[in-house]
Image 1 (cartoon, rainbow over the protein chains, first blue to last red):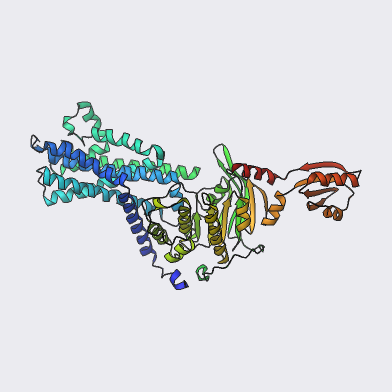
Image 2 (cartoon, rainbow over the protein chains, first blue to last red):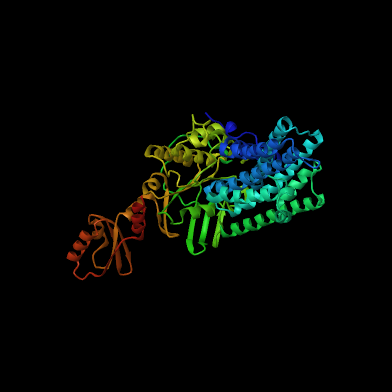
Length: 266
Length: 313
C-alpha cells in the first residue's frame, strides 16, 4: 500500500524542522502532565485550597494599607508557580531518567534543548494557569481589585519565576533518586515557601525566619511579585532581581557541572 | 536513499553473511568500566550492512552496555566506537539509527498516536505514521493511552518508536522481554521483514532460540568478553558437545565417522574432537589406540554461559 512518496513527505528546512520539534515536545509535555491527574490536580489544588483557607477567609482583613486577600493572591501565585516548576521538572524528569525513558530520547536525534524547553514552557504554562485561577478567585470571592496592568505584570512575573525555578527543578532532577523525588521536593518546597512568607505574610513570621528569608529564592520572587501591588518591604527591587537571577545562574551552573560529570561516568 | 527500499513482506532469507567490505558499525577493542566492575573487557564487534546479529548472553554479560556504547549513551573507558564511520553522538548519525531499549516506564498519559507523532518529528525523513503502525502492529490501539496497554503492546510501541526515523541501523535490546510466545513470534516476523528491506539489526537476547530464529550471526558474550561467534548452526553445534583433546595416531577421517562427533580439529600433534557423547567416543578411541595420551575433556566456555542462561530463566 505504501509508496516512497507516502513514506517520505517533503522534508522541511532545518530551522522549521527544529522549531516543529520544540513545539511538539512542548505540546506533548503539557498534555502529558495535564492528563496526569495526580500532578495537575495537586499542583493547582494546593495553592487554590490554601488561598481559599488563608486569603479568602481573611478577605476583610487589612494590615495597614495592605489588603490581605490581595497580598495573598501574590504570594500564593508564587507558591503555585514554584510548585509547578519543581514537581513538573524536578520530580517528572527524575522519574523519566530513572525509568530509562530519557535514554530513549537521548538515543534519538531529538535536540536536548527541545526536551528542556518543553519542560520549562510547560512549567510556565501551569504557572500561568494557576495564577489565572487564583486571580479569578480573588476577584470574585476575595473582594480583590486588580488593574489590567497589575494582572499583566503578574503574568510576566509568573513567566520569569517559572523559568527561574525550572532551573532548580533541573538540578533536582539530576541529583535526587526518582523514588524519593516527590518527598524530597516537598521537603524543600514547603519549608522554603513558609519561610519566605508565601503562606503567611512574612511580617507575621518570627524575626529569625524573616532574617533567613533573605537567602531564599522564593523570598525574592515573592517580593518582586508583591511589588506589583506596592506591597514589598523596604529592600531594593534590584536586590531581589539580582537574588533571583543569581539563584537561577547557580542552579544552571551546578546542573551543567553535574551533567558533565554524569556524562563522563556514563 | 535508504528510503527507496520497496516495502515488502517477504521472509528474511537466511543467507550466510558474506563478509562485507565495510562495517557500518563497529566496537574496536572496547573496555568499559563502571567504578569497580568491568562491563566490557576488550570487546570487538562489527556490523555489516543488511546483517542481523544477535548478541547472546546471560544477564550482566555486557549486552546492554555494548548497545549503549553504540548509541553514544555511554563512552568507552578505552577503545573506539564508529557508527556509519562517525561518532554515535553526532545528531546526523542518530537520524539513521533506531533504538528499542529496556525501559521501565514511558509517559503513560500520552496516546500511542501521540508518542509516534512526537518521535516522527525528530527525523528529517520519518517513516509514514501508517507504516509505523502497520509494522509494529499497533492497528486499533493508536488512540489508547500508554497506561491502558498490555505488556506486549507496550513493547510493540517501543518497537514502533525505534522505527519512526526509518533507520538503516536498528538496535533492539531484549525486544521480546515480557512477551508471550505468540507476541514474540509475531515480533520476530517483523524483525525479519525489516532485515528483508536491507536494515541492519543488532539485537540482544538471552534466549538461544530467539537468536537462532532471527540472526545471520550470533555473538555470545559473557562477563564482557566474546565467548563464541558464528552462524546459528555453528553456535548450536558448539553448545551441543564437549571437547576431547589428546595425542593419538587415529586418523581424522575415522574420528569423524564416530557417532556423536560434530567436529575434529588437528593442531600440532594434538587432535581436538568435539562430541555430544564424549564418554562413548573416548571409550571407542581408547580401545582403538592404546598409545593415546595427554587426554583432556573440557566443556566449551559457551556451555558455561548457557548453563547460566538456562538457570536464569
